[in-house]
Length: 324
Ligand code: NAP
Image (cartoon, rainbow, N blue to C red):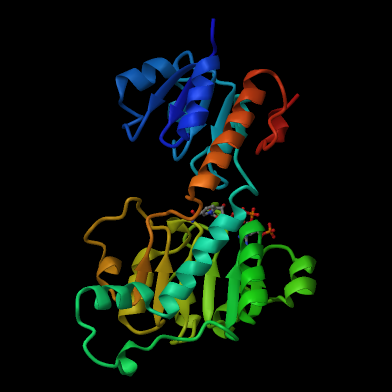
């Protein structure tokens, strides 16, 4: 009998088809996982889960007594309750590394788009308003030779620093839990306390994972420490900031602009005041989503899943403590 697998939301088609050849795959998209009767029924006998954004908590695990592995098709895994998974000796995996350059491209693109007001000016031209040479009301801010502060200089933060240093002659400041000698030597990056980084940076870019430590760690006080000309970029997770405080900081002119790939609630409410602000550039959490990278991530997530289902150590195991 084929092993049962639940696929959720995003698994690229060729990879899903390949898994369907080998396993009894049940695919679900954007359902209420707490209530969907078919999902809960299949979960009872599933040995593996693969996909994106499925909340795997105690309640879900109570419906999944045979589960061996949860393969997340992303690098962030704040949707997984690792303590509960460990208690039940269930493996959890993610897709680190594969998406690093793609996300760094998106976040750096977002930074430039925000500083140079590209979406606003695009809309201006397309709406037929461009009838004469423009004045300073439409000017943006330079990116090159400015100071970029990166909070969370891990794989993606490092790739952003590389682009900023080699491509745009920017000065790099960073804040993490541990010092990064590679970035200091290669990009001249300088370590700063969080407060000092916020006060000195022209651009503040948030690239930490969402953890109990980082949840809501940029709020009113932090926005007030930033320069009034500062541009804030969030590429991490929406809940790493207090969104209401960002709205207030923009409304009060405490910072100049923001570029956001992530929101407190996703998809964000169409009435979110951020969506009405000209100095805010938004993306629909699309950092890693190119055709090439999504396919590679799905393949890697499937490799992780198959290893776990077949008694082998998955290449990107998040909780090695359950591996015996
Ligand atoms: P990573 O290599 O693990 O890097 C994370 C960095 O955050 C590390 O440098 C870590 O510092 C730092 N960090 C963790 N907790 C911190 C804290 N309390 N204070 C300061 N720094 C802290 O991960 P990655 O691959 O770069 O990915 C980072 C995050 O980006 C993911 O977890 C995910 O949330 C987000 N992401 C977003 C998208 C998107 O589409 N927008 C796509 C992929 C990933 P240490 O090295 O000192 O531990």
